[in-house]
Length: 322
Image 1 (cartoon, one colour):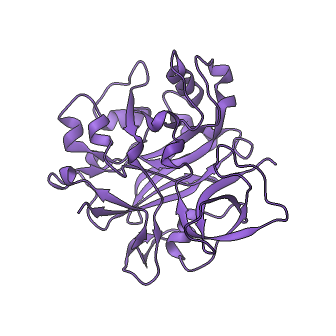
Image 2: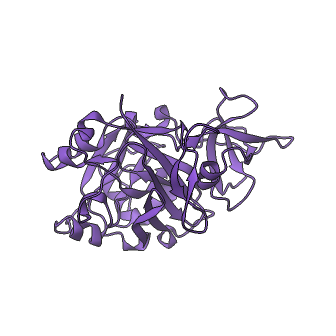
């Protein structure tokens, strides 16, 4: 069966079991629905596989479950190469706001597998905060629960933890030295990511891996969308909201300096990209350090990465690292 959208989750019937499935609703924003209505069941058609890399097919007879906890589409041990590959300065407006020239080749840095984090899934009756409301505006919502991103102590000392809304590309098969014309055939699907960054550490050195590699610094989700459902990813837009207020305006993926086929081909030169490879394609303009005055993440903030259509909203709650 050709799937359109898959997610990885723990079902309410067995909260310690991990399942793969497709949301019954074909266009529901899973991330926003869970965030604003955590007590409302979301039905998922269960697949036979145990990984989005080999999802199998819907069970026979058909079986549906509801989501107890939404997980990152990939488990840490499924990350290709054990890390997350990231591209910097891949939108013209972002390079301009950073005061940097456009690169001649894609700037590459790595986030470790320990940075991978789940989307936020609030529990009921445990705290409140301000978040994005479907249809626009803000609403008081419950924000405690699972999938909470720690603000690293090193960034708390300088108050420079920042957001970066990004489209993530996941490969479904191994490639090496792949041509741009063939690169897209390796794509399993598309999801949302937040390249959480500590700016004081980033600007203090020339390499970015340390400042962007803290535990939980790469939430991923809420679903992965297949190329069959989304044959032209340049039609997607990426948008970022802090506590329900827009910070990164909706920007088309067609604005990428280095498009997705080029990125896959470039990263694969003399380098094996295994199935499960995750590529963060870069962030558009509107990051916190570019604001006047600068704005940064703080304890209790909720940041949402919205990718439209189909992918939906990756919601993350941030709390100070203990």
